[in-house]
Image 1 (tube, rainbow over the protein chains, first blue to last red):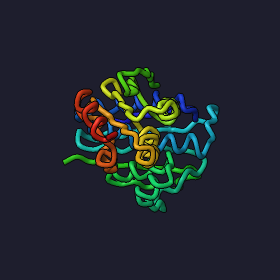
Image 2 (tube, one colour):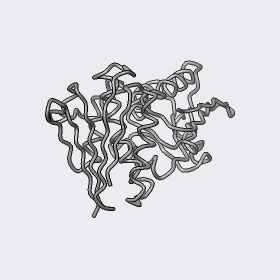
Image 3 (spheres, chains in turn red, brown):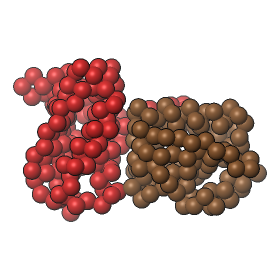
Image 4 (cartoon, chains in turn green, purple):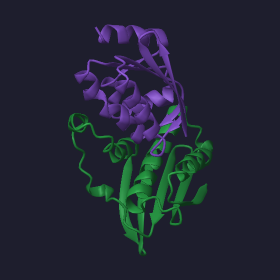
Length: 137
Length: 116
């Protein structure tokens, strides 16, 4: 099954995004914890994009696509016409450094990479695509 | 959206979290913890029984207070998390860096021990 959703880049959209993802993944029959971590991964990608690429511009829309080929796997795509953080080149800093600096940020991409099996970021036909995949055995 | 109710029980501040903490609502959590710290509480209990979701923004708030709580000898104890919320803390190992207990009584006991 395929699902598609367009959102405006405001922080208010995050709640709708989470709801959309939860509804789209119903057929996978995941545990609450599994579902919550997938929702979290997409929340992090979208938050990053909304805040850092579009400065919470609610009039700019991005597209979310979800493909659920079977109960064991899912593919997320976030498609935008503006480059977001290149997740491929992300180098995680030690958590101890972030704690010592008393920073509130710096965890999002680390979470995404920990949760998903594969995270890709590429340009396709002039659009920037962040593609995340996850399979369960 | 998160609702945060601030209560006081004896010498402990209790923050009751209800709803979801994300990039938008994490500022409310930050302000509530900061207020309890500013008011001089040495025991801060975070009631997570009604917390349905937390993103990295919320995790980051808790993480940013780890050193500050140590420096001020303040005990911050989280309790009552659902399995799905606990799992979010566990992904990056934050569950081991914070004090997390199952029940309010256990949280109070830990806060008493940590604040000695």
